[in-house]
Image (tube, rainbow, N blue to C red):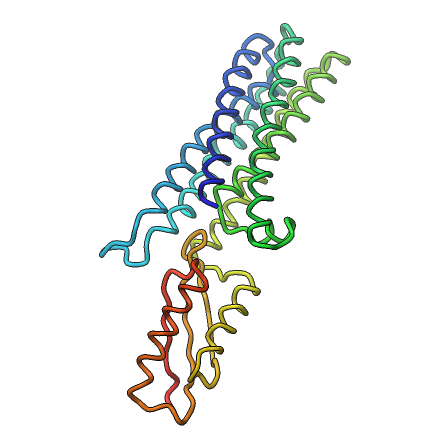
Length: 302
């Protein structure tokens, strides 16, 4: 899924950069607080795609002596940085812009420019979101699970961030269009300020969701129950294994698992055969489940 995630991130970066430039021009021409907030939003999104790309590239580096289990969790760290940047660079700034427009109203300029830019932005964001959704559906089909369940158990923070950001961007654009329209119709500039506040709340909510998701993965989250059961079945199927006493798996990165298990052997297994059984079991786990980065199988003392 790494290649598809990279495509989604690059598409999001290109779209957000184009949108940020056009929004900045429109914000200058119209003087709209909602458009200023949307400009900050798009700039934050563009920089976030760079951070996500950095996380993707660093996470695929091979294991080293200093990092024997690889660098898979780099994605989770950079996803947390993205969430913080979105919170402060987008959400808090938009809320401040709303406060400033409420206390110091501004006359709107050439409003039609703002509507044109917001309409074009809707198109750009829709294209970016379509790319991300297509990658999710492709990955779900590859895993053989429904798209809804795949989204629920998605462990790729980069793809999750693109989906959240693009969805938030479309919601923010709707808020900006509504606020600008009401301001034009009523002449009340508070609607423009209110739209900026709504955009800020949307970004703060998305930042919270992304940060909470990244927190769970950084701390060490288990894979979906289906994967745990598949691993347990694979271990129990090994000749010589009497029963699986305990089995745990920890997400070490996107499609990277560390498996910890405690098993007991049949009574008729010679002591010298136990080591070969465990070595064979570890090799088979990695062969049948490529996402298993490493496994530690412990024998339960008789």
